[in-house]
Image (cartoon, rainbow, N blue to C red; front, side, top):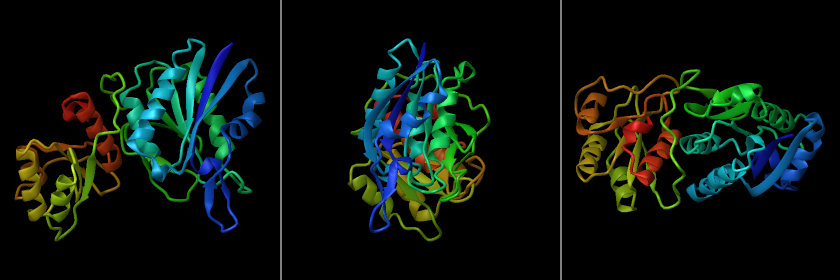
Length: 305
């Protein structure tokens, strides 16, 4: 008998509507999973409720707990795969953190919902069913961590939430089969601080200075175009790199890779020459996690991108 472990963490899939109309994660993991058990004859389904969070409240400490829980589930040789239910707001961050530390061939699948549990057309049960099917499929081995949503199967690397309400919530900015760096043993991220700095026309250096004064150990810049910033921000980033602070350049543009083509003070080529690392196809949220993993493990950030 094979086994699927479902780890629940809250999110819209576990939300019901309060008297004030606001969504609150109230549904237990068992209530999410039990209606689907009969769809998997001959398979043992184990549910582990980890927390009930709106994923916009997810911290690195919470991600650490999920990583530990997934690795603990995979200690059982009978487990064929693990499913994690998660809020959509930060699912892409947790997915890539899990992928960095996923040293096993068995699939780990994240899913959730855009409509709450008590919605007449809730998408949560169908998404969870599909995630459990993929987690139990031998063909999903050696694919790393996956996001399964609205029948789409998306690798963690490059995954991005592309729509606030559409049931097809996620897309990928990466290749269909992205190259995964060599996964590492888990390292805690809870004490790592990486800030995201937005670039925009006329931006001053204040946000960079404030992040460093607040204790940021690394910076991710959500640049313009293919990875460019204005003059003041560029000067502040150069000073940060002179101090040994790693800087990763992403972009606010929805599609395409980051590449350093432009010169000038804030051009991508100039920043790269100073030591800034391009995020390739990863957008700022995932770039922040990758940089945090690099800092936590002592790996050179470029090796994770």
